[in-house]
Length: 212
Ligand code: AMP
Image (tube, rainbow, N blue to C red; front, top):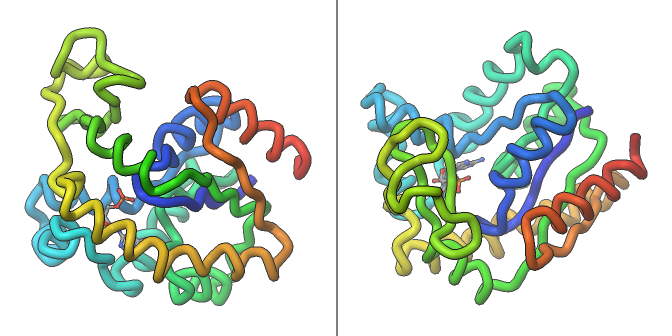
């Protein structure tokens, strides 16, 4: 199965993508995580995108498509994959189509900007493995310490309130039109974010059950 998870930053795409990976046995691919790893390792790519990432701007379609095209050739993608945070522009969606990559579904996770702003404010990520937590909704067992690897939990630089505002604006102006793009391809599905992670997963699985 090849899936796209669409939705505003902080709506919970990464959390659901990790769960779907375990349920469906296909990898989740987050270009945001790949770019953050490049920044952490100070690779030439990481240095090139740092300014964009830190200020909540999108990096270029060329960079993202090259990164993604290479990743989906890895053997673990042979049976499918879940895209989290990509495509993010019509240009990226068209590039994927031109490369002959078709999807079974593009699922958009919906919630209001107000809820998203509250969520992002409480998000903490592991600076070692990238695992994501929320101070209130999914706290680590020991405050400030990653359950998975013991790494330190920090706030992402682009989760600072002024940057979040930028990222939401970019989402509404540039990424949200992808809903129409995938609707005309007949593969758009909508899932309304639920009060708990488990309930949202249940809704997602129900929607995916319809297409399997
Ligand atoms: P994310 O982790 O998905 O919220 O992405 C964090 C940041 O990485 C974004 O604000 C962009 O700067 C960059 N980024 C990640 N994925 C993409 C993409 N598909 N297109 C452009 N920029 C991206």
